[in-house]
Image (cartoon, rainbow, N blue to C red; front, side, top):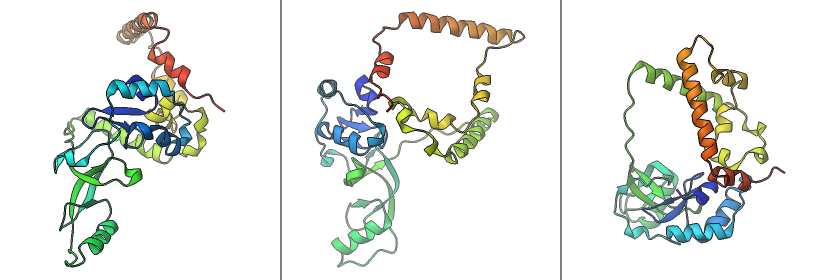
Length: 250
């Protein structure tokens, strides 16, 4: 991932040679990056340095467009693009649409001489830019590795389900978006920890007691590593630049 594109919440897909928005999973050509960020994600208040952006696109040889005809009829899922796992495939042509209403409308408009099918084939599909309603193309979804059925994994998944429920019920309007940096908007860390008591979270990472000798050794090792890394870090590193380039709170 190019460091400057990362600060904007964008990544570069080598298969498409296009820039993809990490926030909404849409492919964007070079000329549309600024309108996309300012119109679709205007609440993030992202500032664009045009010289750095132009250089990044030039270094990556990003395309301004992509011809879907170059894709195979069924291609592997393209990482980064939003996936529609239950799209509808037309019975009489390769046309794919995302809703039952739209596929029926397509049939009545294009295949009115043929009877309406009683059901439709469901396929996984993607599109380059769902905000602009670009055509769908069929893909084979990436297989997810099966989960280990051990006690520790089940315990972790149970905790994770509880966390997701807590986050879902949390009123995100309590968070002032002007006080949230670009990186937090991408990672959503502030939303993930928001429902929990900060004192409890801090207690989980406090220094170990004297009786916890092994953890005490680990704490010293981590402290030593952080100290060494801090001295090795360039003052104009990516971390410093992310802070400098973050929008100022209003």
